[in-house]
Length: 101
Image (cartoon, rainbow, N blue to C red; front, side, top):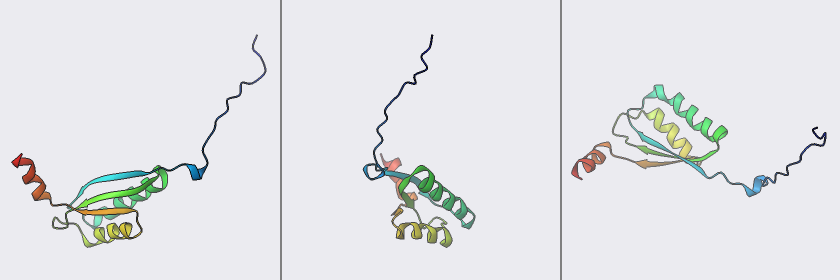
């Protein structure tokens, strides 16, 4: 017959101070991003920061290819609060490098 005594399993969890998420999300190059995509940008960053635990986002931006001023304003805001790193990226130069190899 089964014992009525429960089995105990001791689980040691580190305190909040001992854990570090260190999750960085690298986002594909940003170009052709109009005002209509600002809401998606904010949703993406806020969800992954608050729910998933991302501490940093890396954005590659080609401002010469239709990135709206409002979209850039949000990217620069996230950069100013330390949540994002913005890197200049040239779509045409990267394509040339692929074909030269």
